[in-house]
Length: 145
Image 1 (tube, rainbow, N blue to C red):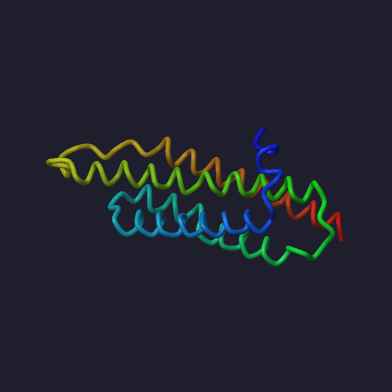
Image 2 (image 1 turned 90 degrees about the vertical axis):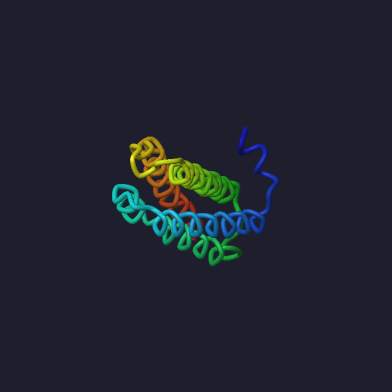
Protein backbone atom coordinates (compact mmCIF):
# COMPACT_ATOMS: atom_id res chain seq x y z
CA UNK A 1 0.00 0.00 0.00
CA UNK A 2 2.82 2.42 0.82
CA UNK A 3 4.35 1.94 -2.61
CA UNK A 4 1.03 2.67 -4.28
CA UNK A 5 0.80 5.97 -2.41
CA UNK A 6 4.40 7.01 -2.84
CA UNK A 7 4.64 5.79 -6.43
CA UNK A 8 3.35 9.16 -7.55
CA UNK A 9 5.74 11.22 -5.46
CA UNK A 10 8.55 12.63 -7.54
CA UNK A 11 12.19 12.17 -6.64
CA UNK A 12 12.41 15.89 -5.87
CA UNK A 13 9.67 15.63 -3.26
CA UNK A 14 11.29 12.55 -1.75
CA UNK A 15 14.62 14.38 -1.59
CA UNK A 16 12.93 17.34 0.13
CA UNK A 17 11.37 14.91 2.61
CA UNK A 18 14.77 13.36 3.29
CA UNK A 19 16.28 16.80 3.88
CA UNK A 20 13.45 17.72 6.26
CA UNK A 21 13.75 14.41 8.11
CA UNK A 22 17.52 14.85 8.32
CA UNK A 23 17.03 18.24 9.92
CA UNK A 24 14.60 16.71 12.40
CA UNK A 25 17.06 13.95 13.25
CA UNK A 26 19.90 16.42 13.79
CA UNK A 27 17.79 18.69 16.00
CA UNK A 28 16.40 15.86 18.12
CA UNK A 29 19.74 14.08 18.59
CA UNK A 30 21.46 17.34 19.49
CA UNK A 31 18.78 18.18 22.07
CA UNK A 32 18.76 14.70 23.59
CA UNK A 33 22.55 14.56 23.93
CA UNK A 34 22.80 18.07 25.42
CA UNK A 35 19.85 17.82 27.81
CA UNK A 36 20.28 14.24 28.92
CA UNK A 37 22.24 13.00 31.91
CA UNK A 38 21.68 9.32 31.15
CA UNK A 39 24.87 7.85 29.63
CA UNK A 40 22.98 4.87 28.17
CA UNK A 41 21.00 7.17 25.88
CA UNK A 42 23.98 9.28 24.86
CA UNK A 43 26.10 6.25 24.02
CA UNK A 44 23.30 4.59 22.08
CA UNK A 45 22.71 7.69 19.94
CA UNK A 46 26.42 8.17 19.35
CA UNK A 47 26.78 4.50 18.33
CA UNK A 48 23.89 4.73 15.88
CA UNK A 49 25.37 7.88 14.27
CA UNK A 50 21.98 8.75 12.79
CA UNK A 51 22.83 12.35 11.91
CA UNK A 52 25.76 11.41 9.69
CA UNK A 53 23.95 8.44 8.16
CA UNK A 54 20.91 10.49 7.13
CA UNK A 55 23.13 13.33 5.85
CA UNK A 56 25.12 10.93 3.68
CA UNK A 57 21.97 9.29 2.33
CA UNK A 58 20.47 12.66 1.45
CA UNK A 59 23.64 13.73 -0.32
CA UNK A 60 23.92 10.42 -2.17
CA UNK A 61 20.31 10.56 -3.36
CA UNK A 62 20.81 14.13 -4.54
CA UNK A 63 23.95 13.20 -6.47
CA UNK A 64 22.33 10.18 -8.10
CA UNK A 65 19.38 12.11 -9.47
CA UNK A 66 19.52 12.23 -13.22
CA UNK A 67 22.67 10.08 -13.38
CA UNK A 68 20.85 7.07 -14.82
CA UNK A 69 17.67 6.32 -16.66
CA UNK A 70 14.94 6.15 -14.04
CA UNK A 71 13.49 2.73 -13.46
CA UNK A 72 10.68 1.53 -11.27
CA UNK A 73 13.19 -0.30 -9.07
CA UNK A 74 15.06 2.97 -8.41
CA UNK A 75 11.89 4.68 -7.33
CA UNK A 76 10.86 1.75 -5.11
CA UNK A 77 14.29 1.61 -3.42
CA UNK A 78 14.19 5.37 -2.86
CA UNK A 79 10.69 5.17 -1.41
CA UNK A 80 11.81 2.48 1.03
CA UNK A 81 14.66 4.67 2.25
CA UNK A 82 12.31 7.63 2.56
CA UNK A 83 9.85 5.56 4.59
CA UNK A 84 12.53 4.52 7.08
CA UNK A 85 14.19 7.92 7.35
CA UNK A 86 10.88 9.64 8.12
CA UNK A 87 10.19 7.22 11.00
CA UNK A 88 13.42 8.06 12.81
CA UNK A 89 12.57 11.68 13.81
CA UNK A 90 9.22 10.47 15.18
CA UNK A 91 10.95 7.95 17.45
CA UNK A 92 13.51 10.55 18.52
CA UNK A 93 10.77 13.07 19.34
CA UNK A 94 8.93 10.47 21.42
CA UNK A 95 12.15 9.69 23.30
CA UNK A 96 12.77 13.41 23.75
CA UNK A 97 9.23 13.90 25.06
CA UNK A 98 9.59 11.05 27.56
CA UNK A 99 12.83 12.54 28.87
CA UNK A 100 11.41 16.07 29.00
CA UNK A 101 8.31 14.92 30.91
CA UNK A 102 10.51 13.12 33.41
CA UNK A 103 12.67 16.20 33.91
CA UNK A 104 9.62 18.43 34.52
CA UNK A 105 8.08 16.17 37.16
CA UNK A 106 8.32 17.15 40.79
CA UNK A 107 11.27 15.50 42.52
CA UNK A 108 12.46 14.12 39.18
CA UNK A 109 15.94 13.58 40.56
CA UNK A 110 14.47 11.21 43.15
CA UNK A 111 12.40 9.29 40.64
CA UNK A 112 13.68 6.46 38.53
CA UNK A 113 14.62 7.39 35.00
CA UNK A 114 11.97 6.61 32.38
CA UNK A 115 12.37 3.31 30.59
CA UNK A 116 14.01 4.21 27.32
CA UNK A 117 15.11 0.71 26.32
CA UNK A 118 12.10 0.18 24.05
CA UNK A 119 12.70 3.49 22.22
CA UNK A 120 16.41 2.81 21.86
CA UNK A 121 15.71 -0.70 20.57
CA UNK A 122 13.28 0.72 18.00
CA UNK A 123 15.91 3.24 16.88
CA UNK A 124 18.47 0.43 16.52
CA UNK A 125 16.01 -1.57 14.42
CA UNK A 126 15.29 1.45 12.21
CA UNK A 127 19.00 2.16 11.85
CA UNK A 128 19.74 -1.42 10.79
CA UNK A 129 16.82 -1.34 8.36
CA UNK A 130 18.05 1.95 6.95
CA UNK A 131 21.53 0.49 6.36
CA UNK A 132 20.02 -2.54 4.61
CA UNK A 133 17.83 -0.39 2.41
CA UNK A 134 20.75 1.88 1.58
CA UNK A 135 22.80 -1.11 0.44
CA UNK A 136 19.90 -2.29 -1.71
CA UNK A 137 19.49 1.23 -3.13
CA UNK A 138 23.17 1.31 -4.10
CA UNK A 139 22.97 -2.15 -5.67
CA UNK A 140 19.94 -1.17 -7.72
CA UNK A 141 21.74 1.87 -9.09
CA UNK A 142 24.91 -0.10 -9.80
CA UNK A 143 22.90 -2.52 -11.91
CA UNK A 144 21.70 0.38 -14.03
CA UNK A 145 25.22 1.61 -14.80
